[in-house]
Amino acid sequence: MGLSLRPLPAQPRPRDRAKTLDITPAQGYFQRGSVSSRHIRRTGNGPHTANGRRLSVMTTKNAQPSPRPRPVSPFLLVALGWLIPGSGFLLLGRKGRARGLIALLAIHLTFIVGVSLKGGVVWPVWAVREAGFNLINILTFLVEMGAGWLAALSLAAHAGAWAHFAPAPANAYFELGSLYCLTAGALNYFVIRQSQERNEKKAFEILAKQ
Amino acid sequence: MTFGILHLLSLVYLTGVVSLILGMDEGETPAQAGRHVLGCWTRILLCFVGLGVVVYVFSLFAG
Image (tube, rainbow over all chains, first blue to last red; front, top):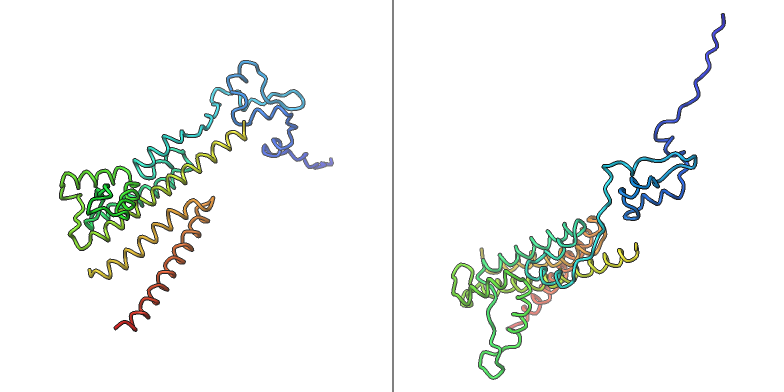
């Protein structure tokens, strides 16, 4: 009695089987935002193989259509980005989150160090004919105001003589502290511009997809 | 802490923050951005060291 051992035909692994499926152009349904899963469930007109076998991947109830990305309003971006430094990037979603957090921490820390050195925002003399008029002071004020709510708080503290947060021009460290506040304000202008550029890039990408 | 040391530390910190903010948007990946930030920070610090040397040399001839 002879036993002949024949090797069994090699069964393709599930991953290989999936590779050998001849997917028709209906696979375009997998593209983002083209047809909702609800539409596929209703019509049954989903992706299928060449021999008519339907692929039920997208027709399950769990499949959700991905939300369409939308660009942020530029006015909102500038206004919120100025008021809270770094928040412009945070509005852009997941891609801008790390940059937004870095900018938020860096600008806040810089301004707080400046205030702790008795620096801050001082209201300049605007009238040209007055004795204290100085163009550099006005430009410094405009740049420092870029720090948003921090600069507004420092200005309010100076006006209200709130000792803990108000700048002290007579202090030896006032100039150095004001340099920190100036740097924080200037950096926020750059951060706002960078977030605007990212937002414009995002809008162009959305237009290109459509 | 003396006044001069505080200014030197401020120089290092402020150049670092400026490099970080301006360089973080340069690369698409964090590694590229990090390399750009470090390169930018190094160049700015070297420029300031050069300026310091020039000022020191000038101070030798003053009075």
